[in-house]
Length: 68
Image 1 (spheres, helix red, strand yellow):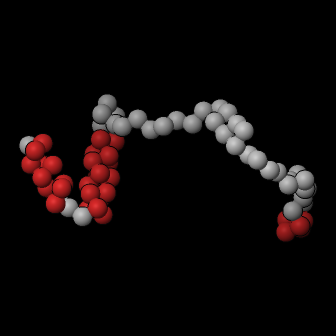
Image 2 (cartoon, one colour):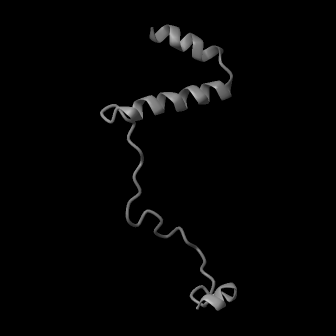
Image 3 (tube, helix red, strand yellow):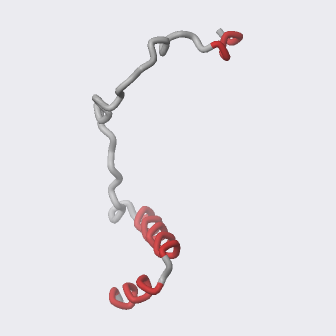
């Protein structure tokens, strides 16, 4: 069965392959035991990634003045 599925997969366009992949993930997600684990973010994941923050970052935004 796996070989047949691979032959079918190889005849598909890239868009069809993507759709098939997404459908397979959907089917797996219905059964939590077989679900593909998602990458989890963690505290400090973006540490040292912010290279610049404007000096007026904490200043009130003029567009929201009427709400403040």
